[in-house]
Every structure is written in structure tokens, then in C-alpha cells.
Image (cartoon, rainbow, N blue to C red; front, side, top):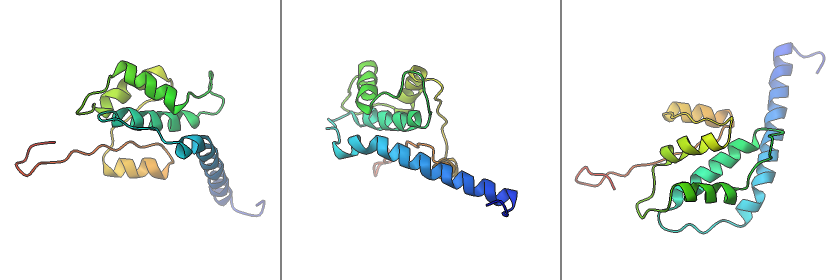
Length: 138
């Protein structure tokens, strides 16, 4: 490594850091993956938002107060944004929820921005709108 050029060393250290971060987040997510929660009609926004918030919080090493569980985050979201049969606006939920967990913030991004976030190992929440044949939303 000492004989490598500085740019190469930086790239290698960046790669090692990413692998360690990925392993840390992956290990922290293992209990949730092994016991997925039951989603009732109209609560998918809370599950998705809680997962992306926790993944973002897990990236903060030494966070004061630790990292809440997905269940704790989801419960807080459902308390503030009760279940509705047609769901909830995920962006609106995240706008409020990031206030509860500083220093998190959200940024709306298009396809290219989402790809860049994934490449940088940042959590991404995608929402889809389906168009009916008559041009309306459902």
C-alpha cells in the first residue's frame, strides 16, 4: 500500500470503509429481516419510512441516544400519522419524521439522484403512482 499512488490508496480505503459500513448496517438489520412485520391495509408508508429512517440512523456512529428500532420508529409514525385506507404521502411523513431524529434530512430526487444516492450507500425510499386507463390516479 505504501508504494501505491495516493489516489489509489484513498480509493482502497474508501472501499474498505464502505464494506465495513455495509456489514454493520446489514448486521443491525438482521433481526428485522428475520421477523418481518405484518403490514395492514394503508400502513405501507409507515413501514417504508421507518426502514429508511433506521438505515440512515445506523450510518451515524456514536449517535447520542443510540438508534431506535424500526418498531419504535414505525410506532411513532403511526401515532403521528394514523392509518388510512388509501395510505399516506411518504414525503410528508418523512418531512415530519426527520425532525424527530436530527441530523437526518431528506431530499427529493429524480432517477439520476436516486441512482447517485444508492451508489453512495444512502438509503432511498421510492414511491410510485399508478395511472388508470382513463388518466386518473389510483
